Image (tube, rainbow, N blue to C red; front, side, top):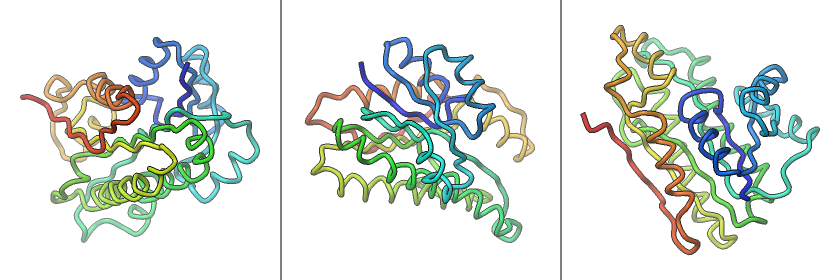
Length: 229
């Protein structure tokens, strides 16, 4: 039985991955932003364990996790949570930039740092759900794309640094995926949201599990997933 820690389990891709791994009988730890959210996860996903830590405040994660029981080892750490705010560079405030970078880049870096001992012990796997925006930047996507470009850099550096410990690192770059975040993006764009046009969240979950299940001695480093339509 493998042990995994997942962020962003509340909806979309994170919820799909959580269900799939529970069905496999694996041990799951879910990061929740507060105690109320943790209780919700425990009721919704029977058998999971939870940790409380707010990705919006990465500087407090060390203190938060230091006061909780942590898994003894981790076969995977899956960074799936994220935030998005669209706007032109001339409109986006420093507050938007700071909150976007905190949740999408600084928090994954800090959480990885704090859990590296458990990952090294298990020769585990760090999976980053990036975005097509991590490979290119379109108008109104500057803050989000910058955070995701940075996430790619984090993954690439981590892979080189931790290969000697047997830790694998994968970045997955989904195109537009049918999730609540995508629905929010459509509202910001002033467009009608049709989930049938976009990648099902479960398809991205399959991509993550494919990378996770690669035989020892092999590694998927970067994988792009696009809708066929």
